[in-house]
Each structure stands twice: as C-alpha cells, then as structure tokens.
Image 1 (cartoon, rainbow, N blue to C red):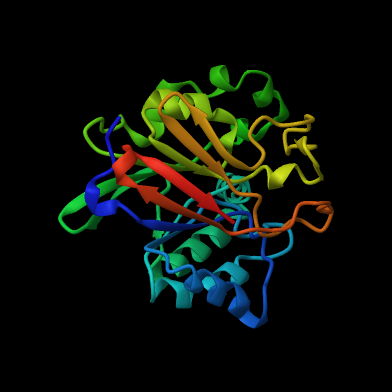
Image 2 (cartoon, rainbow, N blue to C red; image 1 turned 135 degrees about the vertical axis):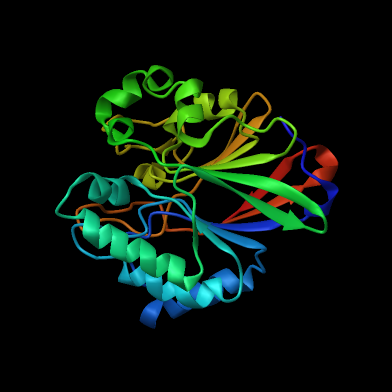
Length: 265
C-alpha cells in the first residue's frame, strides 16, 4: 500500500452520500454554504445522490453546479443510479443526468481512476460501480464471496502499490475485499446509519435487511486500510431516521502518520 505524500498533509475531503433528492434550503443553498465552510480541497459524493422513484437528480445538480466551480467534485453511482443504468426505460434519464454532471464539472468515477495532484505529488482516487447483485440481501451472508478482491480488480484494475489509493465505493459491506485489493482508504455510504441508532449499540437495520450492521457509520480499520461510512443526507419517503441525523463528513489526511485519517461530521 502506498503512503500518503507529505504534500497531502492536512488535505480535507468533504464526503457526501445518499442525498436521495433532498434539498437543504432553496436550490440546496444551505448545503452548498455548509460544504464551502469546511474549506475542502475535494468533495466526493458516494452514490444515491438521486432517488430514481421520486426525483431525477435535480437536487444534486443544483448543488453540484455551483460547488464544482469552487472545488473539485468526484462522484460515483449508488444502487439507485445503477438500477437506472440496468433498465432500458430509465437508462436514458441517467445518461442525461450524468451528462449534466459532467457539464457542471463533476468527475464521474464509474469503474475509473483519477490522479489528484498537489504540489508535485499525487494520490489515486478509484471509483467502483457495484453490480446490482452486491445490493441484494443475500450478499450480506457472504460479502467476501460475493465480491472478492479479484472482482474489485476487474472493475477498477489492479491497485497501484506505489501510491496512496482512495476508493469510493457506495456499499461498505465489502470492506475486507476493498482492503485486500489494496485500498488505503475507502469512503462509503448506503447504510443510512442503520436508520434507527441505539445509544451504545449503533445502527439497528441495514438496507440488506439484517440487524446491527457491522459497518453502519463512522471509522473502521482492517489491517492497514481505513473505511469511513457516511450516515447520508437523505432518505426515501418510506424511511424514518431515529437518533440518526443526516450528516456531511469531513476527513483530514495526515501524512506524518503514514496515512492517518481524522474524521468529523
């Protein structure tokens, strides 16, 4: 695994996930201001920024257009976007939405990698587009078998062991596979914080229909790799949060500790 270059010491990432078409203020102006107040070097959106059943992506576009003129924005697909991609009647809507994102200046990392340069050094950002099978309840019964490290490599290629690699992956369920593939840091969402959060226990229910998910929110470690899971910003109309407020996550990288991560929300 690659170490974080000294040039990236103090690098700040604002991590957004699971907006599901929600707006904070007119045209998402409050969310826009809140993100900028964190002084990010990069903003990442880890999927489900639209809700395919209720909203066609306008809310995220309202945020992304002004945001990308101030700071680089990287985005990946979540299960809602991928569902649209896999269904012929909805795929044109997704194509139009993603074209609008690219026109706004957003970099889409769908099974792609991008170099982020800073003071002559760089970090590799990877984005994996998980197949629909990775979102089925049975995937939670054997995550490593459902998506082994070689399957990650088939999506995004082999990890560059000479450089720090940050992987954007909508579901955190496969963290051991991401780590064994070679990710130094993984940023995920999807779990909605477990919907209902119990004091001292954590999230109650995952989208995989199982109780007390292992990776529901916050920071996790597997070997040398770290995972940060966002509770997300929105929910579908049928989901209600209890003890689980929406959040944006701010991640600060520290090169002096190899590749330490400071996370706040």
